[in-house]
Amino acid sequence: MSETLTVPPVSAGETTNRDAPRPSKNQQFRALLNSDQVEFLLEAHNGISARIGEEAGFKGLWGSGLCLSAQYGVRDNNEASWTQVLEMLEFMSDATRIPIMLDGDTGYGNFNNMRRLVRKLEQRDVSAVCIEDKLFPKTNSFIGGHRQQLADMDEFCGKIKAGKDAQQDDDFVIVARVEALIAGWGLGEAMRRAEAYHRAGADAILMHSSATNADEILAFKREWGDRSPVVIVPTKYYKTPTDVFRDYGFSVVIWANHIMRSAVAAMQEAATMIARDQNLLGVEERIVPVKELFRLQGASELEIAERLYLPEKGAKARAIVLAASRGSELGELTENKPKAMVQVRGEPLLSHIVSTYQSVGVNGVTVVRGYKKDAVQLPELAYVDNDDYETTGELYSLHLALEKAGEQDEALVVSYGDVLFRKYILEALTETEEDFAIAADANWLESVNRYRSADYVRCSMPNSRHAFYSHVTLEEIGEDIAPDETHGEWMGLLKVSKEAVPRLREAVAEICAGPDGRTATVPSLLRVLLDRGEKVRVLYSTGHWLDVDSLDDIVAAGSFE
Picture 1 (cartoon, rainbow, N blue to C red):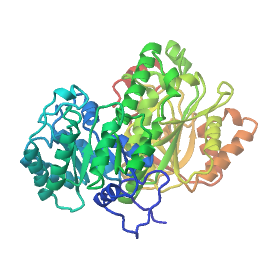
Picture 2: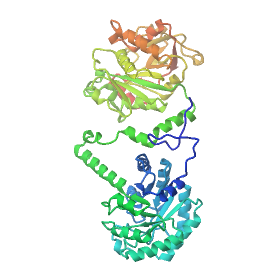
Picture 3: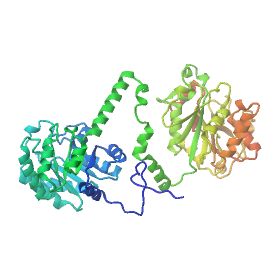
Picture 4: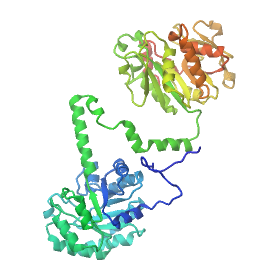
């Protein structure tokens, strides 16, 4: 079945009909303005808050000047430039499929600035702009409103006309915001200005008030009637029941700054708690998981797009990292954490291994923990715990991981939590078509730890330039292969195709059920696979990996790139 790519991502629970034409955002906003019932806009100030508003069920959004300024950390005095506001609006528009009305302050200048603003908003699929009849640079209406000067009425009318003449889409909306009540000029002046702005072409009037009750807003609506839609912002008179607004026939109610204010409260609480506790235990259960951020960002849509548009680079694979052992040979370094979590260049060994996997597109990594398992905590990994790590071997850890994973339609790479390897080695393994493949170091004689215990391999042919073009297979693996028959050292990497994973699972389960199965190793698994007639492909390398077994290896790992 082919996959469908939807941009932007469809909101949770929403279905689409690709054959049904969807009204444009401008048409949607025009419908809200002319609705026979009161409609609501929710404040949003960036892409993620816009998407949250859409998912909550709002039909439109308010790009609040106060909140857009606040998210930049500056005052609501036109300190954020209009181009910075436009940039954020573009993210908001891209993140949603509902219309946005910008709180356009005074239009950022004279009639000419207004014309350019309208053109730029239309280019970004923003459906409406509200401009207020104050002087540029503006001051927030709730800060000394009675001391603020209003714009010349005729000049403001010219600004409205210029904006209407500049718009390309007839459904684009310009709302004129009257500040006469804020400035204390009374209902008469509010009516005079509203009528002038209506005649100048404003699609709606936003009547603003800083009173703690709705009396003057309701008085205006009684006088105004239904000459044009009326928009209100009940931030101060929030105690007024919404049914009152319905009864008076207001068109749109804006909840103007409450998403930003609620976010600030939550951030302050979390920051205070983390600073006080110096850990995340108190805050983690009170906040959304990281995966919710990924969902809101549309991470799943990107995964679909990658499958549609990126060329395949070998089989898709997941990984199992066996990291249950302590690594007692490292002494005090592993007294409180396993070897996989020993620091190398400021990061645990395991982090370096996972980064290599991720660099070739292997993102589903499962780690088998055992010794000091609580110390193994890295993000975006799955974990399986081998609580019997002291009496079991690495194959039993693999058995536990395979059981927990269940049936998965992906290739698999198995490695250890103390083996570093170059990216190209992993790429070569994941690109092989064979059911089973391993990596072997043909430079085993030059190893600085040549005389340590290791798993050597005898293959169908030794490494050479001819071997690069040949199908080299494994014939024997173990610690006791004669030197003159040894062709390399196994590097601790095993790749299994998705078709062969069930056979792998069966072989591992059979070995673990045997008399010595709980202490078996991965090399013993490879011997069983050979006995069963499986072909194991061998890919030669010449160094470029490191098995961390000693303090000297830790030092060497510091320069392993």
